[in-house]
Amino acid sequence: MNPPLREQRDIDAIREGVADGTITLLATDHAPHTPDEKNQPFTDAPFGIIGLETALPLYAEALVDSGAIGWPRLVELLTLEPARLCNLDRTTRGNDGLGELFIGGPADVTIIDPDQDWSISETDLHSKSRNTPFLGRQVKGRAVMTVVAGEVVHELEAAYS
Image (cartoon, rainbow, N blue to C red; front, side, top):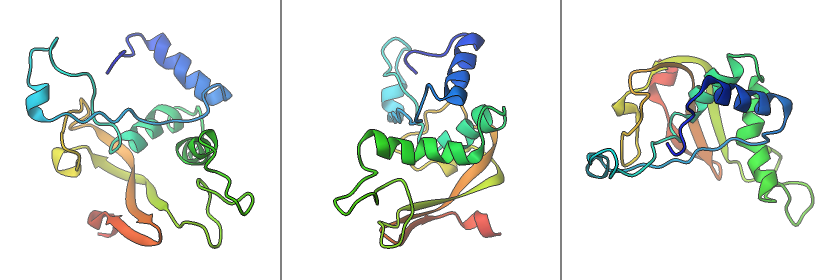
């Protein structure tokens, strides 16, 4: 990652910024690189790791489990707040836009299980790469279904077993 969070005080400052509202949205710089791209001398390899597939449980650990914020605020920081920043929270009809659920809306939803324990493994990752330092890490919280325009596009089979 560029730049890396080197000191605990950096991590604490970011957590405090989220908790006090200074930081108003969360995202990832999802940077998948093929194994060939990453298998270079350290100084030649591109910066970046995958982030999209591991963001939810890692944000939950850093922010919810630490007590900085609750699950409702975490969901807002990942959905409604980015929509607001990009002015996608409004439509020509009025106040109905992205980042919220409403009758007649776009029906783009991710269902999460905040209590699901799992271990990040290569078989769970669907990006073009597996470059993450979190392989093997035990985490809690997982997206178990994704619906886009009312159609299920992802469903985690293990979620119901």
